[in-house]
Image (cartoon, rainbow, N blue to C red; front, side, top):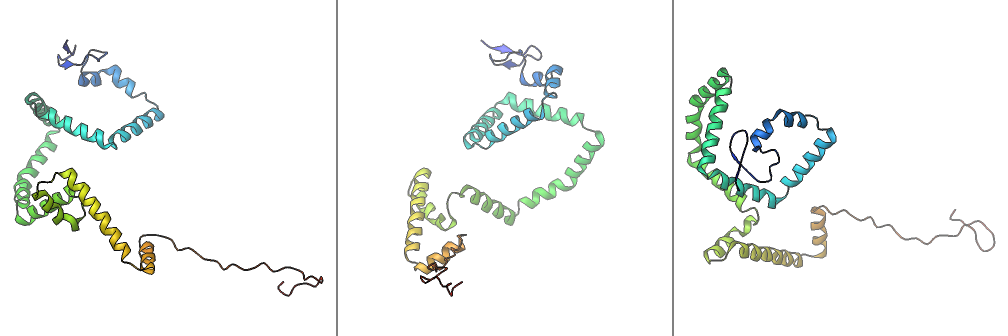
Length: 214
């Protein structure tokens, strides 16, 4: 059974306790007053929970996919456009006019600047580095060859990771022990101080004479 918000008529879920949509619930004076009464500990716990959720790649990917799916709906796009227009109308007229003048003065220049061959090449290189962050740059040609051979991305990642590990083992095997030590030190390993081991000398001789080592 479909439910509707008692304030604006938008569709809501069956789990709604107040019978209001998210926007109307947030605009409710009682709800706003309750939010202002949160203790610092409650705010800290909520902030920590939000950061933990945002740090989970699975949750971030799910949010992104859901947001893209939602924004593809025509009614959502129309509602978003109407909200943007309403926000512009609520702006200070002087601020809105300054923004319009800045757009007229610099908008065309900036757009033309981003379409130059140098800017497009720079943007393409940055996009490629972001998408290929999983693969060392030295192995990009290998990835391209595997892709041309029809190997899927997950298999390419696994094969390249195995190749990188094999190359690292072969490189380490070709080094001398001293070169391995230098490589470990260059990677941040700490030097170990070797202290000489000396036999503890007695304080007294068998005859009761003080030892000369004192």
